Image (cartoon, rainbow, N blue to C red):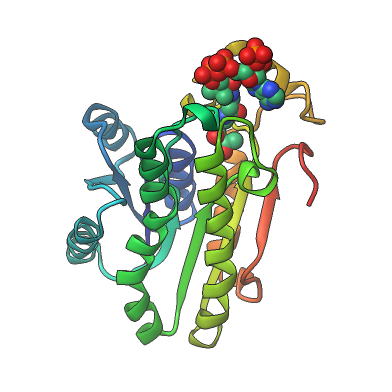
Length: 240
Ligand code: CAA
C-alpha cells in the first residue's frame, strides 16, 4: 500500500509542485489549503489530488483536518509543512497583526501540524517531517522581520525535533528555497524583484519543481540517514 503524504498549502505555488511530485513518486497525497476554494477545486480537477480546507494557524482545526485525512486515506507517514504567508513591511511600519499572522502560520503552523501526527509516527516507527523554510530565514531580508524570524524558527524546530525523532525512525528536515517563481515572489514590487534576481548567480528565479525534487528525495527510504539537515536550494544566492 502506498504511503500517505500530507502537504500544507499544497494546492498552489511550491506546495502544488510538491503534491504533484509526491503523487508521481507513488504516494497517496492530501493537499491542505486555507482559503482559495477555486484554486483548490481546479487543482483537484487537474491532478486528482484531494484537497482539504483548514488553517494551519489553528491547532484545533489541524487536529480535525488531520483526522479527516486519515479517515479518508490512512495514517499520514509524510508531512510537508509548506504553508506560508508574507506580510512584508519595514519594521517601523509593521503592525502587531502583521507580526502575529506570520508567526501563527509560518512558525506555529509547524507545531500545530506536527504535534498531532507525531504520536502516530512514533508508534509506527516511521515518519518524515519536511518543512519549507526560506533563504530569508537564513540571511534575513529588508521588510521581513516577521517572516525571517519565523523561517529561522522553522530551522531551530527541525534541529531539535530531529534529535527526538531519530530513534523512532522519524527524520525531520528543512528546505530553504531561494526566490522561486510563484505568486508570492511575483507580488514583490517589480523593481525590487529585478534587483533580487541580479544577486542570484544562476541568473534566474527557481522553479517550484526545484524544491519538489528535494522533498521527494527527503521523503524516500533512501534518505533515512539524513535528519536535522537544512537543504539550501537558492541558485547560489546565499551560501551557508
Ligand atoms: N535594503 C536597503 N534599503 C531598502 C531595501 C533594501 N533591501 N529595500 C527597500 N529599501 C529602502 C527603499 O529604498 C526606501 O528608501 P527611501 O525611503 O530612502 O526611498 C525604503 O527602504 C522603503 O520605504 P517605503 O516607504 O517605500 O517602504 P514600503 O512601505 O513601500 O515597503 C517593502 C517596502 C515592503 C520592504 C518593499 O521594499 C518590499 O516588498 N521588499 C521586498 C521584500 C522581499 O524581498 N520579500 C520577499 C517576498 S518573497 C518571499 O518571502 C519568499 C521567500 O521565501 C524568498
